[in-house]
Structure formats: C-alpha cells, structure tokens
Length: 219
Image (cartoon, rainbow, N blue to C red; front, side):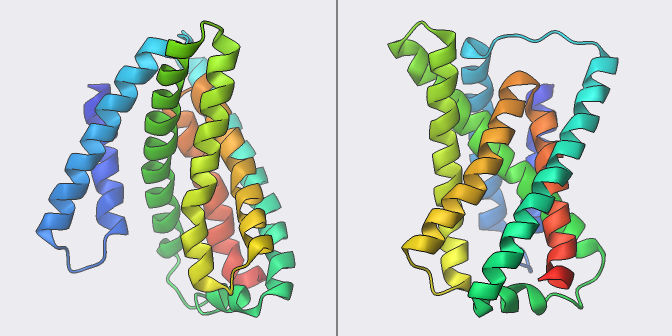
C-alpha cells in the first residue's frame, strides 16, 4: 500500500513536470521508471534503514518541524541567490521574467520537484547506496555516512545542468551549486533516514516554495 501511494504521488508530480501536450510514451516511461525507483528504493531501505516506530502525534510534530526547517533552508538559499544574482545578471533575469506567473505556479513547481527529487535521491539513491555500504561494513554509522554523502553529491551534481543553462557557468558557480544544494541534500538526507520520506518531501516542498514564490520578487 505504501509503495502504491508513493507511486501515485510520483505520477502526479511527473504529470506536472512534463511539457504539455503530454506525449504518452514519456508518461508511460516516466511512470515505469518511477515504479522501479520506488520498489528498489523501498526494498533497499527496509534492509538497512533502522526502524523508527512512532505514534501519529509524533509524525505530526515531525512534519511541522520538517516544514519549518524547509522554510528556513529556503530563506538561506534565497539569501545566497540574492548575492549571486548581483554577480550574475543572467541569474537575475531567470527569475525576473517569472514575476507575472500565476500564484499556483510556485506551488506546482515545489510540489513536483519535492516529490520527484526525494524519491530519486533519498528513497532510491540514498537507500541503494546504504544497502551497498552495508555489504562492505557492519557499522551502522558508517553505512549512513557513506550513503548520506554519496546521495548528497549526486543531488548537487544533478542541479548543475539547469544552473549552467541559466548562467555563464564556471568553476566558482559549480562549486556554489554543489555547496548550496549539498547543504539542502544533507538536511533532506538526515530527515529521510531519521524520520522518513514524507518528512523529507515536506521539508523540500517548503524550501522550494520559499525560493519559487519569493525569488522572482526578491531577486
């Protein structure tokens, strides 16, 4: 049941992310890939992620904290982007042209990115790396650190193409992209491992919402 709910959320986010009009082959391929990521990631996580039994009240508190931490992370990232936009006019232009977007657009962007990226980089990548690490060492702390840092690096690298397309690029920009996204990846990875996928998605959603909603107006 958990796999099914996660997959439905993935498909919903995928439909928002894909260009319109929809091409059936892309929808089917993306949905199938999402199912593979979820099944493999869930299986790997069940083998090496320690159980954390909690009450519904505990989960509610965790979600609230995740949203607050995400909003704080988004504010920090927004501050860093404000500084970068002064050095890179193309970055300012990337956000400035979105000032007239409808109010629902930041919500849609935050919804799709938080679900797609958390399933890909936390549920799948972090869990699979942890499973591989668990074959090499029996120390739980080492297993988590290897998977945590590895998935964070992948998360940062995955964001470089989008930034490169919007700016002139260069070593400094790449380093900053890895640093900024790495900071977020570390927090999201810890939340996923300690609390779960839903909490990581909530944190990611809140952070993205702050950046996507305020970025065009602040930068």
